[in-house]
Length: 282
DNA sequence: CTGAACTAGCTGCCTAGGGC
DNA sequence: GCCCTAGGCAGCTAGTTCAG
Image (tube, rainbow, N blue to C red; front, side, top):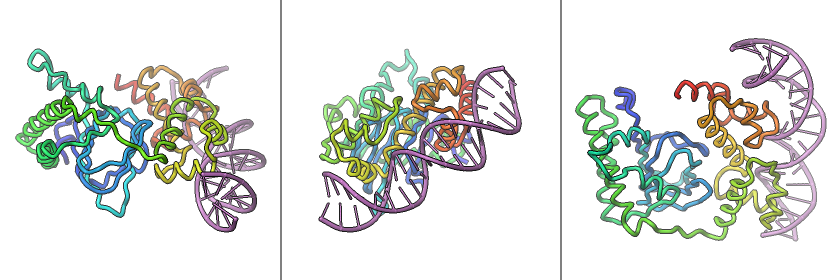
């Protein structure tokens, strides 16, 4: 049993677990992702990044994301998931005035390659958090919360440094894949075919699907459906009274039955169950 | 990087059944 | 009666392989 289960903490701290997502995913929590070693291409929203050890990503979990890991290299990373309302509660005014979540809003979707000094401060802190997270006693619980607060403050400090506004270079191939993802982003609610995509982007259809699979590890249509399902989840969260059928049409499905099948395939639950769960949480 | 050939799996449609 | 889910099935197309 972890701290999250023992004390119903709205935080999760993971290090090197086997919980490597097999696919694009999204969640309601905020996420701190810190890459330590291995070879990883990170797909984040409509961008692709070749990560280097020491890269830090801050994100709102509703952005579709997926680390494509090269299994030939040992993959180490830290992940901290937390509920934004909980973090805001910890840093509530008038006792705190820093705007603790602004780095997640201003810098999200861009990795920050940390400078050595900041890495030396961040890594022991993450190690300590992951260690405490596995314990169950009350003292560890409080130390964990204190460490988590320290982590958020350190991130806030790093995000204010000029180097945090760094831009990532991309190769020509990655640029093409980004164009495909951007195309899907702007047209996912419409009827998209590979032919349309290839024509509009002036790419060869066969080359295009091969390049996409090579770079991302998944097929273009797999990404398209993930995007639609993600949008459906957002729409359910915004308005749980919305009917499943209406949302199916809104996100680009032509048939409710097809939407239900696909939604269940990607999320493990039917759209109706998801909608009821959101309704009961509100 | 392009294009032809092939095929596995998906899409679209229909229907039945259950819940409200 | 409406909405949703699930299953079946034919036709189509996305994805793969390979040659150039």
